[in-house]
Image: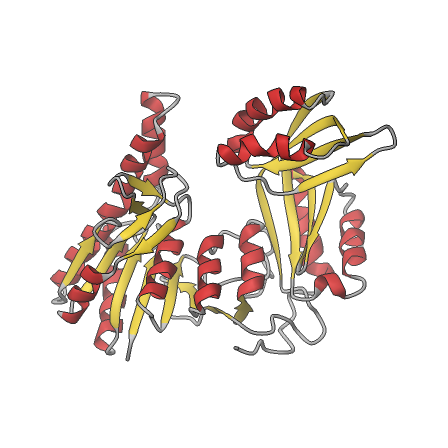
Length: 413
């Protein structure tokens, strides 16, 4: 038996009872002969509560102080789990991200891991202790605490698995695995036994909350098998691994959606070299992620440039874009909320005939208008009105018959 990394999400450690249940699961893995490193999220809604508390103090909390505040949620979880394991007779030691050797860049609230020094974790494992690490956080070279963004505990877990050369990384959550669609919107959604890194990455980037995109990227780069499963039962989960991510007769593996969408349109941008760069550079400098980008050419020498950001970044993005729009002599800036995106994901979609037409026909059948269409090698995404999202997800799930069992298993590379 080798080393495994287990990550437990907020619902999995949401109460003292749940923490004791997690301790029992960790102990079972240890008694099977595994060395175990555990990464934990904050309990339940702790992070949301801390954010709300900060905003009661000030409408514009300092990012450095927010990171230090939010990091306390995961610290609470890991110390309580260490206590629970010790009460069961298993030696355990808890670490903050800094104590675990997780070093990040200095971008507060969305930092990236740049290096991990696992020496202290390895020493504790050699003493037959379980190492418990506070997820979602790290430390800069200047010893400032940073956080990795929502879902960042997934990234902590996979990064540690890669650095420690773990056999596998197990992501424990409140669902049984990765489904063909959100079961809350599509009750007949089917759990996938396996899915490729590329397909899981697209699903995560397009809104599937079960895995953080950066965690999937790390898993793919370092070829770490990732298992997503429930901490509330012992059912088999979903294995995320390499391989041919397709089925014999249906290349669509899942439907992803995201409601945290706002659209900005820069109207009448002169069709000149460098205009788009001038618009997007301030957003990059402010660390605002831009998702869908569409440029519409016209006959009068101007173009409309539309792109999406998260609703939380909309106000800041508009403030940054308006002055540069004036600088490039655009006619104005418009924005829209109340939007959502829905995507079909599967290896080979772009090179297989009929998938786009089938998607558009399914949406048309529900009377759903498409605002923007974008594609990648394994994805087709449509921007629609948020009120139509449940109907859109259901229609696409039916159109591609995803409730049917897989006819061809994915082979592991």
